Length: 451
Ligand SMILES: Nc1nc2c(ncn2[C@@H]2O[C@H](COP(=O)(O)OP(=O)(O)OP(=O)(O)O)[C@@H](O)[C@H]2O)c(=O)[nH]1
Ligand SMILES: [Mg+2]
Image 1: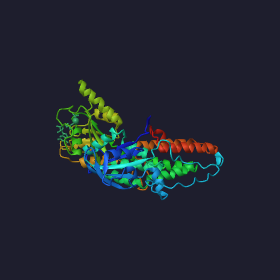
Image 2 (image 1 turned 45 degrees about the vertical axis):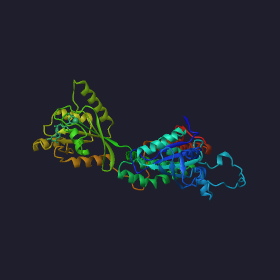
Image 3 (image 1 turned 90 degrees about the vertical axis):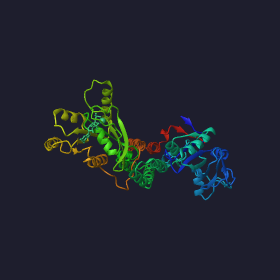
Image 4 (image 1 turned 120 degrees about the vertical axis):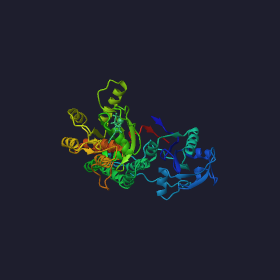
């Protein structure tokens, strides 16, 4: 387990070039490191720069003009809510009188608010040029100064306020920054105003020992796990079938360029050829595979084995046939062994009407295409989109957006449902605390942060 008693940083903007790159720093030494790496135009050390102030200056090692923004840390946010500027020295007030504690069983369960693994200290964002070199140089300087670099999601989770809603929100923001299509970005943006509220409501129900109600709310969200995960993880669509039926040609036709080699020689595709794309606004990875047949050729046999592995793990299996030849018994065997989600009758431009009718008699919902002319490819694309997302959630429905969130809901629900309704108050409090822990994922973050 890593002990982050030191300051951490992360590149928050997604990979690749952009207009601006954002590097966040968090920890007790962040101000000192910035003082040594950056010269602010206003000449003030960072510990005395106001919160939410944009500080213009020069990054010393590269000479780049950039800005640094001081974000309030969680303890600062609390102070600001109370009307104090945490950057300014505060007059100390006498300690509040301690109320006597009620006996254990009658005490209202408190959600764990400030765990030992949080960083409570300086929090900055460096906004520099969006090219890869600018952020790389800054990150190298920070690393030389002893700041540990973390992946963005881990950084965001560790530095988020320690409420379930805030952590949920930080994960949504991260997912939004990684969204690869407009449709998924719109859904994630909408979730920002729904998910955290829903999670806070669940937490309140658990804290109030209303396990039944919390469970119902969790289960409603869990129903959309598969849908939500596909917003951040591309669905895998596998094209399979006998050799030379036009699998690679169809994949090329869908993505709009010659991704896979196409040739009249049967057995052209050997390895699995993947291509990311979007279908109906959903991120999708198309996988073209080797034609399925018995082969003596060792390389081709390995390719066929890989194809079978891909078929077994696919989210959507598309079995392609050559409609220009007659149906035979082996086609039925192939369909039985693959159990495809969609069947495509390709090479329709070469097929005669009676052959096509015969295929249709056996597979009535097959899609007829010609990769050569493009006919029917739009129907195939539309069918893939429909099959991948048969149901859409209500726009106001909170959804888990990652396998990790879905797993946390599941774990929490398991604890709540195992808690006996007639258990003692302290047992129910313990179950509630455990259920909240699971939602927060504090135990599972694998990283301990201390001041
Ligand atoms: N006329 C016609 N030819 C096609 C069509 N689709 C593919 N072809 C041709 O059929 C041959 C095989 O196409 P591929 O896309 O390589 O077929 P494949 O299923 O990927 O073949 P393997 O990789 O060997 O398994 C090529 O010569 C293509 O040009 C089609 O719809 N109509
Ligand atoms: Mg091929």
